[in-house]
Length: 155
Image (cartoon, rainbow, N blue to C red):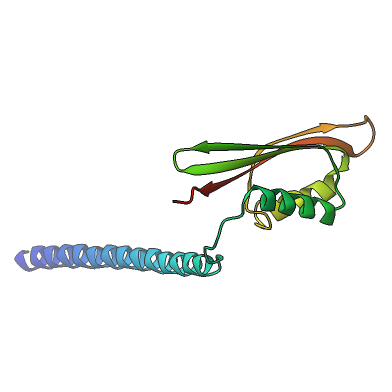
């Protein structure tokens, strides 16, 4: 009976040992998977940073306006209203362009918007975009768009 109890205790200890080793191996495997994912993310971020344009002279207001107009004409869009503003505050100047487009096909505008924001063809951000259906039953829209570009002030 003493031998049977000893074997039972030995089996229980062996079971606990094997189970603990298995849990630890799983934890190490999970940590390794997370580390590999982090390395892949670091590589992707490094490639994004390396793909950025080198800093140069930021465009002035007239260059900003010209870039916006060139991009509009590239996508065959005509602004019925075009307003420019300039705000200076805390070491930076912000150029703001508000445009109104009338009776625009949505596909052309989305291509333009894609060229501005993710495409970075114009050094600007979309601050406001309001789209209204121009004519009921037709796929044309009236669009109010506000673009903004901030540049640091020259010292």
